[in-house]
Length: 269
Ligand code: BGC
Image 1 (cartoon, protein in one colour):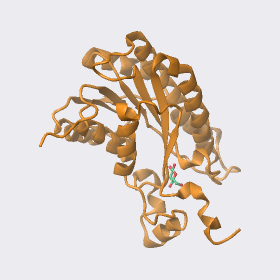
Image 2 (image 1 turned 120 degrees about the vertical axis):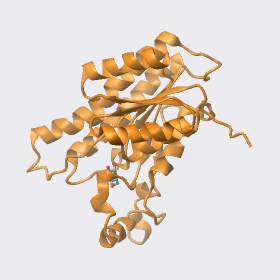
Image 3 (image 1 turned 45 degrees about the vertical axis):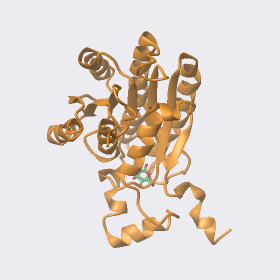
Image 4 (image 1 turned 90 degrees about the vertical axis):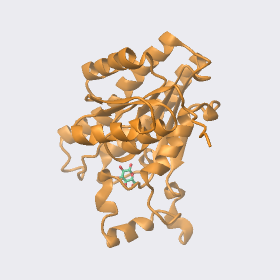
């Protein structure tokens, strides 16, 4: 039976796609019929493996090394996409990292690193994508929209996080950056939305799930009683990138097993 592929013919860029959520999203976009650029900053082998996994679905893919916090790298990455694929339809603004420290120990370098990759990196990629979407406009045979941007945020755009002030600030910034971009670009039929993952089993948070004790502690924060998997986020990303969500503009989709429901209050208060 032929599988209906909701992203057939679309061209996507996923930043930070060599591991974790980005990897899961990149593969799912390929499975949904999109051609995919796998951006990464280090780890050629992992990025090439993601490319191979995507190509198995009969679509095009290549890996591109670029630092999303570098204006020059981002410009070069978009130039190549247009050269190789002829267009871009979907940006998954995913690259992100943590540099955790108590505030009294946090260095300016740790603060700047997280803000420049997580927030400035998303701005630089969104700006290039917007330029390309505006230049091309809507191509009805491809999509109802001129382009789609999905920003990877976090439950920590809402939940304050002691010991992670740089990370929580970057995610709070992403929330209003995404909403402001959505408001500005909607009249051009460009849709900007975000996903706010909760605890997902990836390399960014191994200490939160690798031991039984840590996992049990984590579950106190997750009403649904299981950790999330990259595939949980990937399905949401495919939907937000597809015309199935055509009237969804400026929304943050929480995919968190209920983490933002103040689970401490299920018995207290
Ligand atoms: C962080 C993870 C954390 C999760 C839930 C994510 O944004 O990157 O380290 O486990 O939020 O707290």
